[in-house]
Length: 408
Image 1 (cartoon, rainbow, N blue to C red):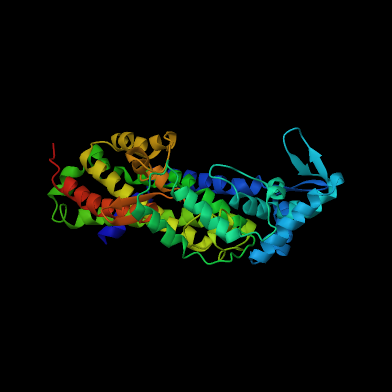
Image 2: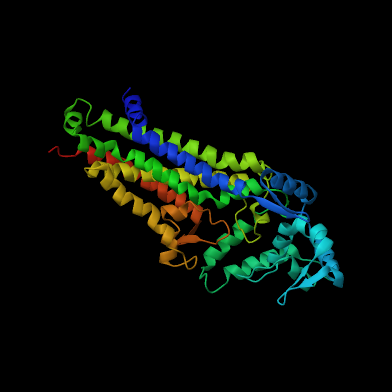
């Protein structure tokens, strides 16, 4: 009954309804923007919105294939053959490219796939396109997966990464679990979700704003003396406040996730849920499908939320006004947005990758690892452990903080 009372107390506040309504609308707009702005092209011009999505999915139907060595070799030869005909080739002073029917029929429907293939043969920090494929010598075969492994080795041994032998071996073992040959197909909806996860920081902030008055609001209203002098004021009522805050946070989180994932998947479809992440970038070492990647990052987001609720409640128990809570909390959440990592190693970068804002970003294509003696853990695992530990530390401290509050 106490939990129900405290939950309704949070829910019925006018400020709660306003903040949550705004947050859900903003989440809908942010995750709906890629749908509204979506456009693709054909020989007749631009195709926007739903028509563009339908056209793109139709094009992909012909390229949902197994990327075998034979298929890769044949595809590269086809592109090279197009470049061998002078009438197909244009030049802008810097590079050659295909024009006319050669481009629209031979390249445009599968340009994303061709970029994936070309970039597998690129050097680190180099971006290639289909027009670089003629430079490849595939007389004896494409050796696509051998090149994929060699590129990963180059990245692992790059001086700027400064990885230990244990860390290199860790990433090699993880990458070896990726099933090859890769299955290619349509995955637009899942890519939109993965690329937009950091936008949910606004939702996490909104939930914390609603939670901020749970204890501090009692101080501000002068009801702390009544609560703490009551029979269950220092025991069950405090627990009820914490549980109701977690319950509210969980329900609000689920609603935001449903909007954030539901909009892209409704518009673009759920196609690609079982495809490997490597069809976005072949250097990704994580052996996840798109669905697994999204679910894992949602779990991490939820742990971040619980830890931030714990911190919010702790600050609320220690400060006399919800506004003071937000003055401390908002910078913690948003200042890291303006900090940029300059690599994947070093104390600055490793700490930055664990701050709330950066932790919302999956970073699947980066070899970010933390070593403790002989133990090596990837950034996703460390984030999950860190925010779980912060949650179980912060919540009891918040309880203790309000319990020991000295009534004026």
